[in-house]
Amino acid sequence: MDTTTLAEIIIGVIVIAAALMVLTTAVAMWRSPNALTRANLMGPAVCVGLPLLIIGKLGYDIIHDGFSVVNLLRGIIAIVALLVVANVASYYVGRAVHGVEKNIIVIDPPKQSKLEKYTALNTPTLVHAGQTVHTARNEAIAQAADESTNRGRLSRRQQKRRHQAHHRDYNPFAPEKHPNEE
Image: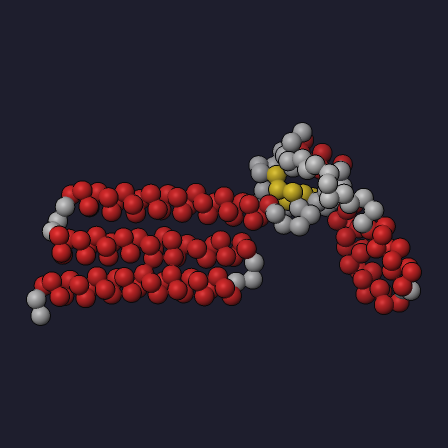
């Protein structure tokens, strides 16, 4: 067995390992329970699998076309750029997913004026450190959850009135304000 064949086998193993890492990540994402977990699962594929593919391509080019400084620099720049973009993207995807939680407004970093504003509006607010500011609305949501076990005991008319009262203030055409605006 000559050195070219041995090098091609090593490169093949690297590429297969990268492909298996991407496949494993895809299966794990398919089975993950929520969007934040899916965003976190992209790490192995993007930060290890794709750089291994770039290394495999660089090794293949070195074997068949000879060593080139330009190809080496292109490979290094591609790997560094991939890692930088992956880290920035995962940060913003995580923040976006974390801030989209139902009925929660994220204030990052927490500011006392913002907390007072949203507490006065009875809006549940998630603070950066993971603390939740409990408001009257949170208590109403908890009370509605407790009363949901009694729904079967209400008449159809009572259920309809309760439903209408619950959605009375909802307007799908109302313009939304950014949560951190004063």
